[in-house]
Amino acid sequence: MLAEPIIDLKDICVTFKEDKRDVHAVDHVDLQINRGDIYGVVGYSGAGKSTLIRVINLLQRPTNAEARVEVNGTNLLGLNAASLRDERRKIGMIFQHFNLMHSLTITDNVEFALKKSNLSKADRKKRVAELLELVGLTEKANDFPSQLSGGQKQRVGIARAIANRPDILISDEATSALDPKTTVAILDLLADLNQKLGLTVVLITHEMDAVKRICNRVAVMEAGRLVETGDLLQIFSQPEAPLTKDFIDTTTHLESALAAVKQQPAIAHLKAGSVLVQLGYQGASTDQPLITELYRRFEVSANILYGNLEILQNTPVGNLLVVLSGTPKHTEQALVFMKEQRVSVKVLEKGTEEVAHD
Ligand SMILES: Nc1ncnc2c1ncn2[C@@H]1O[C@H](COP(=O)(O)OP(=O)(O)OP(=O)(O)O)[C@@H](O)[C@H]1O
Image (tube, rainbow, N blue to C red; front, side, top):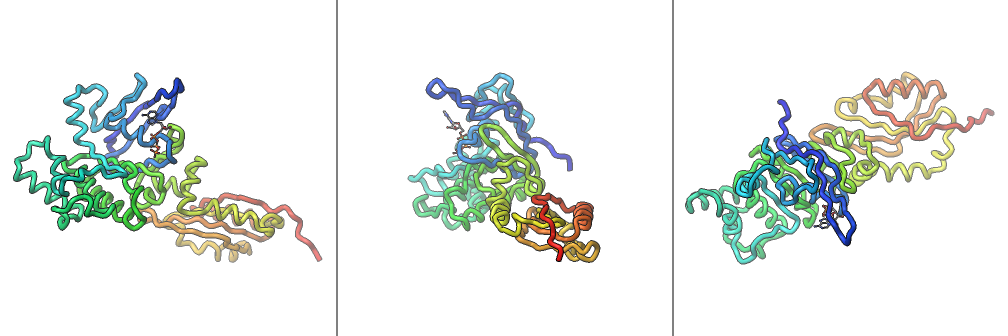
């Protein structure tokens, strides 16, 4: 299927003036999100994620003249106030702090979102019941927000955000206040709505675990800029920007393992013919009995110091830190062989110390 952009942001800048100082919250960003994507925008606090994402529905206007904001094929910057209101209704939003009305029941909170719709009172009731069922809250219809857990409150937020059948749902740190188990349940609900309703989801988060669980594409943001964008699998298996590596490490712990491994005396004094390598593999390449093959073909032994395996979008993605040892010539041949097996090979340390001869 051909990817069809539903959100197309071009050359977006947002500059705030603060005490005569310019804060470049978003700095010349291009972002394209396809229909049906679950697109993660990840970055630390202050990176500019919320500001960028608020540009999608023009809650925040770009501050440069060159910017273009196209959603569903419409240039939002060219619309009058009434048309913009209509377009905004096609973009739902959920937040960290739920923003529910405490004096209204769950049913009334959700129905409030339908106030501007053309539905009759009876149809509105029907739609609310449908929405509460979709988010698993039918039993709580007549409760008040104070009677709900955090996860249930966020389910109300989601029901309200999708009440007008939007094409896009923006989640701005919507799981940041939730415990890990509830976070997973809410993320799975978003993935479920993406599948059932064809909803495009934009997930802003500082948690790579959330991205890993449900996103198919990722943008990494730092100081107002996107430092890396790509498919989840590509970003996880071959991250380029140092910040991306940092984020991935929060779930794989590879960089921390490497730092610990490099402290070991045996690694600091590798013998000639020994190399410390990082092997990365995905999908079918994990099925190869690689390590056995290295010994069989080249008499190169492999000492695995650290390994990790993730299942991303039903595909195994793994990393190993390994010391290969053999004669210098055989080790080189083993490295070439592994590259031919669709394994990414990064040589981290090469032994230079002479092997003692008795
Ligand atoms: N209305 C505003 N006026 C002045 N500066 C602002 C305003 N909104 C955001 N900023 C600044 O813009 C930068 C980006 O903020 P933004 O909230 O977009 O980041 P973020 O990545 O979403 O972080 P967080 O997760 O903490 O909200 C920060 O330096 C912030 O202080």
